[in-house]
Length: 106
Image 1 (cartoon, helix red, strand yellow):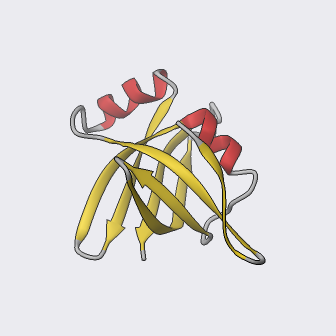
Image 2: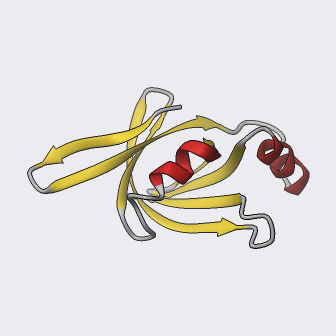
């Protein structure tokens, strides 16, 4: 997975986050299995669609150095780029691992 800055206009940089579709293994047990593999589940919603995705935890932690909740980001999923707003991040406060992220499609 690739995370990088994608300059779109002068003075504005959008972070591009690579994602994979999540088509199976839903629920809390499935989420735990993803986290053990270094991935974590996320959700993209809006415009009449709800997409379940999987993100690389290490790459996303690197991206968190440059973005915060409420920032505009691009999520690349299966060759299509979605313009989103990074809405929420859930972390396990005991272990410091990422648990879930939400993105709103704009």
